[in-house]
Image (cartoon, rainbow, N blue to C red; front, side, top):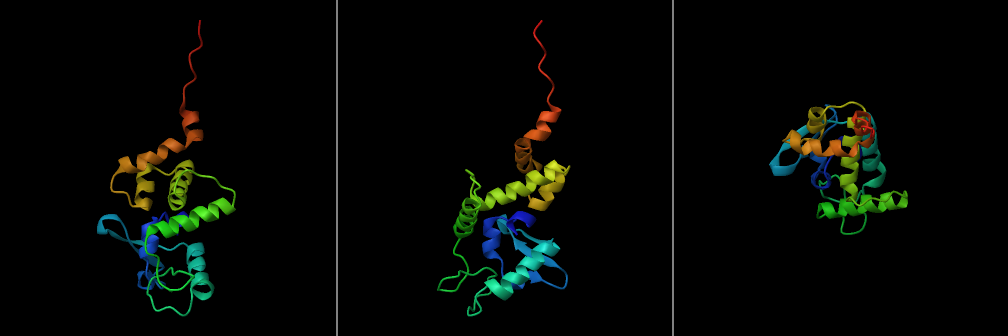
Length: 158
C-alpha cells in the first residue's frame, strides 16, 4: 500500500476493514486535513491484502483496524511511527540504507518511478493526493538521470 498506492504511514494506520470495497475494488483513504479519497486497488495489492487477512492478521482480535499488532494487546497501531519503524527495519534487512523515514521512502520512490516513466507532475500529484503541484515538484529534483539528459554542456574555454 505504501509502495504501490503511495499511502502515507498515517493513512495505513487509520485504515479499517470497513474502508475496503472488495466488489468495487476500491479503498477509502482518510488523508491529511480530513480529506477522504477512494482509490482503486491494483490486483497485486488486493492479493497481498487478502493474504494478510487470511494468514497474517491475528484472528483473535476485535478491532476493525486493518493492520493489527502481532503482540498483545491485539489492536491497531497507535501512530504512524510504528509503520515507519517496521518499514525502516525491513529496508535495513534488505540492505537498503536511507536517511528518509522508511514509509516515506516508499511513497517518494513511487513518485520518482512514475516521473522516470514519463508521468507528469499533475498525474503524480493526483496519485499522491497533493493539493498543490508545488508539493509534487519536490519529487522532480531526485530524477538525476532525466535532469542530466536536459542539461546543456558547459561551454568550452577558448
